[in-house]
Length: 534
Image (tube, rainbow, N blue to C red; front, side):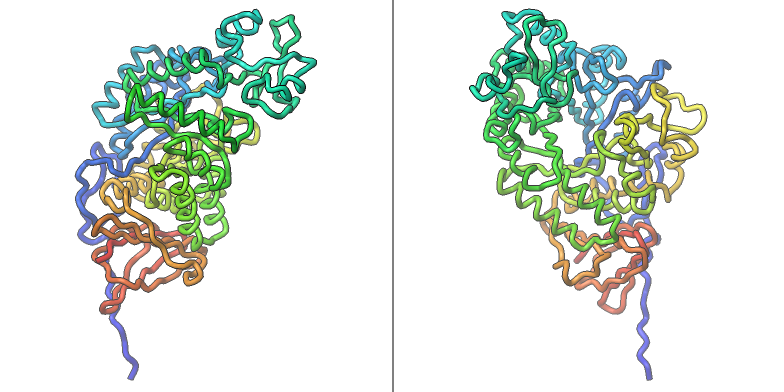
């Protein structure tokens, strides 16, 4: 006689607490979980391009008042901090060529608007991080225009000049600080200078590089940093961190950032700095941890994108762990900062082939892995965009509501994100199956469980796991949370080796079955299951 096993479905949807965010922001994922105590331990940050985020004065351009009015939304979402892309005066739409480090772009409002933003952010417990672009200024910055007007200008040493017909020799003789190799495309004619000089600008003629060995220039930069720290910002995102000195992997770059960090700590001992080292190699990113406390983990996204698009999840936890070990070897107190896409990259949704199921799993992975995760504005509603044709394509307006959207910016006619192609936030907030609800649910989950927010990472040997499956355990003290994702195109099951205390979250109808003391995860294609272990 055959032995029949009675499999009991542990109903993820049964006896669920109402864990929706206040203000009717949507139920998110169904959870069986501990009650969230309101502490934003998940440490999730949100990148904002002010120009595209929210417009309050009807001029079509996003503004600081728009950010302030939407802080309630971000607070309810569970966001711990915001990173504002450049808010300083600039001749460009993006602001990465700064004209005045201690002023507000008039398109975005006035200093009083920034002060109001800080007041509300502090009240809501949301930290504010500013983009700080000190590798270069705008060519319209008064420092540079004065430096070009006269070789005896006190600002001449703020930048890197060389005789137009003698650049290579001057570099070879060590007369051009920070530059050791001659690349013609990095040198630009000084338009207003009749003395036959060129200036160094690694990115473009619009962005002359600052001389990192100029005491006067650095004192001016430090003065600007102190100005914003005194206003209460938590710290800075450091643009182009690997380009201060021309040779990226150089001790000079490390020494520069170590000195920079130490100086800013004299203004604020707890100053927060996160560097941009845009590189696909974890080794190259790790190198800069010698000088900086936190860096964006670009390899994290590149590896995850590959895993999702190649239906192979088993190696990813090992990749994450290997990278963090390399970071720790350079700085025992490192802060790992994972992300999906950002303003310099093709949008996450587009990189995943506009596949919402993949985007949902990407969010679940980002928000259950170690580190301080960053979200790019609009990622939670599936904003699309490819850099082909211009970076503006990945910086398009946020869609707050369909039809008459009072906050939607119009500075740019969107190529990728219209009401016909992307569901607005308002529509997604009332749909428990939306991408937004997945982000909201997993952020709340991360804020609720210390193990997900701060725990260590363990994982099985990839050789013993089906290629499609990604699994790992996060543990803090006695709390252990196991996460399993199926990145394959067909359903899979997995027998857990340990007893389950309770199921915590289910994405795309993932379920847990029990046969006596054996627990089996049932995972449809592109699904996730989160359980608390005994």
